[in-house]
Image (tube, rainbow, N blue to C red; front, side, top):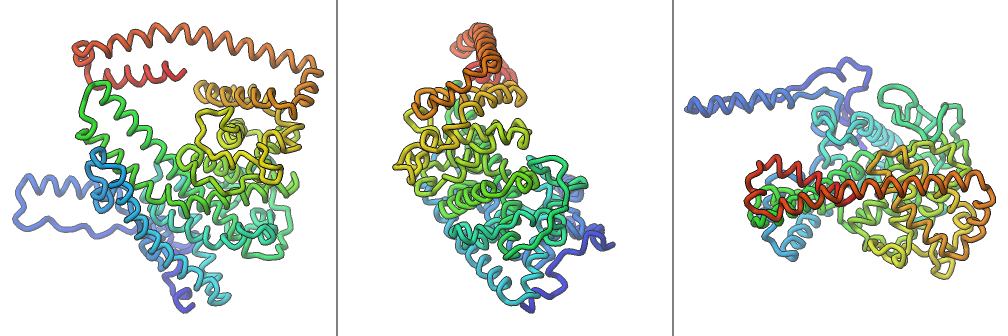
Length: 539
């Protein structure tokens, strides 16, 4: 408790003069006896460092370098640091067992450290009111100074390291654990928290450059916040924000690295090259395996999945007026996490109840809520969740999601898609509406979304439970004819597009089959042709 009251526990307040003071670390001096070439290299590296090393007293870097909790939580396993990548050197030559042993060894070290962080934060929270207030203020500061950490390429002179953000999410998940494993306690999450600046400290401000979009429009802070328990709502919303700044961008980066590794391997094989010795492929695989230390850590992944199903249950029970005030990122992140798990860690989904996740997806896609959730990309993601997680494997041959995840244990193990009453009544018309809406998501995304929607509709069409809903749809002749015409036009467009692409695909196949002709092209030309060829084959 005494530590929590030291001056260095918090960064300076945002409106203080000290907050805008720039810190420039002292640069090392040129070593004695350095040659002229070494001196030029040294000064070049020094100039590059000077352009990036400075940071403000109130910033992400300052948080982890100059506050007590920041110094504690900043440690980790940077994916591109030599101390980590050395474990996976020449990754393409390693056996699956060697890679697994390397990952598990580093994972145990990370878990041991994170457990100690959890113990420290817990002791500070329960040490007394003053100590708890200081810890909460540090959480607020951490989330505010890292507001842009979720960007695809965040400015590292402004935000904290991925390691601190990961550890922050682990600590907050641990504080949430008692109520995402207890339904009664989760009922104490009060939606009014996000409308109470006094309690959220500016994290959920409605105005300003860093304001967070809400599910609805014209949201105000008019709600009166009188929670039965003030700590549970705080932990829930702070944890959801922390995950948005850590696991979400991290998962996106991981997907990109996996794609780059697969594409590089495919290109090397096409050129009859040596996969094991390629430096780019080895680098991509090394980063991929380093990320899997935490992104495929069963304890971390299952806690996140349980958290978001609890979040879905919370969003299910609040009324429309409260729902529109909720930060949009919670639903967006819920979709991203579930879709990531279905692709990268499907086996870890076994044994977890996703009933709330299913029901929330169906509810938000229903026509009653179409006017509330107007973000077409978000609505498309909800459709993807229903397809990727809840479409039974008999209708989705590409899915590795365990069969138990798609079924409702309270309905005799029947699929949620056929046993859920709201799904029976609303899902078919919701998907027909969504089929048209995804037109706004862009050409390539639109095709992917529509393929999944069509597979869902086919499954529903073959299910007796949904026949009444389809009959009601046909009774609205004007709407049904409009939809049918849209389907026919889309099919004609797709057929014409395929006929245009087939000659281009064949030309590249012949080009690649001729080693002399293919080798005569520059690497840049081959990369461009290969990229365009992959797009043509996919679409």
